[in-house]
Image (cartoon, rainbow, N blue to C red; front, side):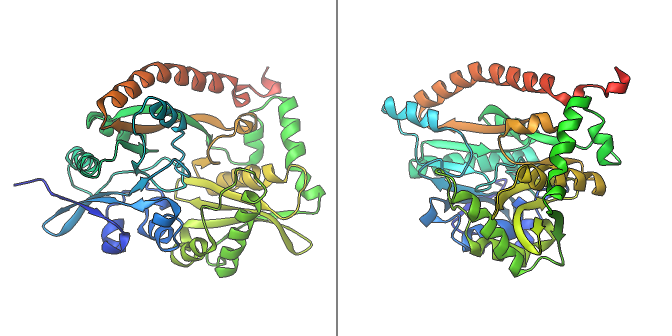
Length: 387
């Protein structure tokens, strides 16, 4: 008897929300929910026309869904945060195919979480191996040269490594709640010079007549969905490299289907919205996603995207605030480097070997960089009174 039947689904319409969400373990991120992924598809934000062809890997037994991995076929690396353009370039110069690639990931979402979802009580190792085998079979059948799993947590990264994929290490900057009772408890971790800088930046909004608040369900409605999209668009349209990956229909869908997982940080002046951030939250984590502004004010970005949400995490007892990918500017403001993972394989033996040789050299250097960032963090400085 086989362990299960692997099926590739071209749309989440073929799985009920209850069956999919039954695979989500405690501590899951909202991005893995059927509602989030389905909104990406139905809004055509992550659909064939936008460069994301759903190829979801699912494992069934006796008609029951026991494991799944959201997966997409891609002809490029736009919006997946794989940071693999150098690999694709080297492969092209060597006459080797890199695209298309099969990505097990959440589109446009560089957030660590579950990439292989397994029903409670199931043998995780066997389920992961079955879906990785299914991914390899799909790649071989459709002549897809590259397979990657982006932003799995460390335990899943190790499972993927055991299934034959090569691991790549990177990092982001996350804020950690070390049991702070007030914002002053957190600020006390810095020396006086840094603390003065932070207080000056934090006080700028009030001096500008701007109030900042968090809007959560049940106040969130379609009006806020439209506002979140307008703020997002205001940012990407200002950037030469900006991309409108997410459209208004996506925001309206998730605000209607999963408002309990969402929030908007609203900065208001004289009764009008001047800036804001769209965030997602779980019981333990706050995820900063997109920000925008209709007016420019000094330090407004830091207050809307960082300081206000840090204070909210302290007030609500949230353990981790992930402010988004990249941003060394977060380090002097109390964020720490956190390892992120991806897993890779190529069906071309030459490219697969070259990739693994490269990772063998890259990984130690990246770990040294992460250690250096941690050592440079100002929050390890004792308060001045203790020096």
